[in-house]
Image 1 (cartoon, one colour):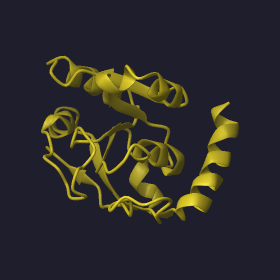
Image 2: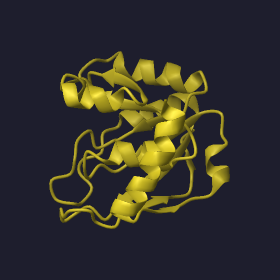
Image 3: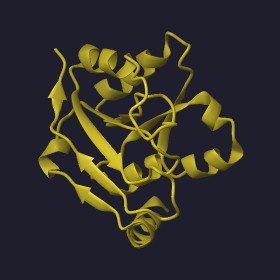
Length: 163
């Protein structure tokens, strides 16, 4: 079902949001991959799922999974629901990365209120250092200030490593 739905949704997103994606394919060839992105709206995960050249596991706050409408959307992707107050949450993410699955985390932990980067939590840096994963930062822009169907740009920044 995903194989059929994803190309259709990608075309719709390009038409509605005039999505511009800028990246190098080689950035995503690493065995251990952690993708971190800023978080401006609820469509960020959808856009990353549609336009990244990998099929990642999304780390999602347990509060989001409690809402039925998000569970419907999340049924189309692989995700890991984590409670950020649990010390075991990052261990699950570490196991995913060590198994070779690319993982997407929004290190701000919530949607921005101002359009600027909010407080960035240290969990993703801990995971990157612990696993030796290649970190690929993605900058999503164009949705703030909020307007209907803005032009959105996904920019993949140079990869980083945290020894």
